[in-house]
Image 1 (cartoon, rainbow, N blue to C red):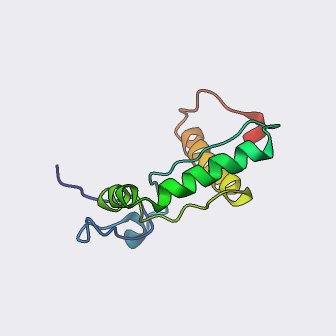
Image 2: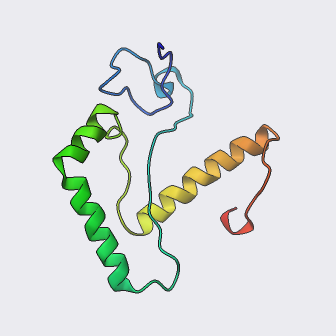
Length: 113
């Protein structure tokens, strides 16, 4: 498989010769990211324990190697807190707007509009 274009803000280290959408004037970016959320009312001690466990994993050399080899380290993703919530809502809203334009949105969520 030969990649033709990357949907991101800049070229990635594992495919330095592949253009990205930002370079050719397409304002469309996508990239792998993960988030862990806790239900409202989760005790703060439990949230803190999960955050510490995730941070310990992020520092692990095996995990860092995996992330680097897959180019998952090429996109800055905010860490715990309201920045993550804003990021996720922004990602949802961009995808929602796209699906609306394509008349493909099947289910919508009033609280996320």
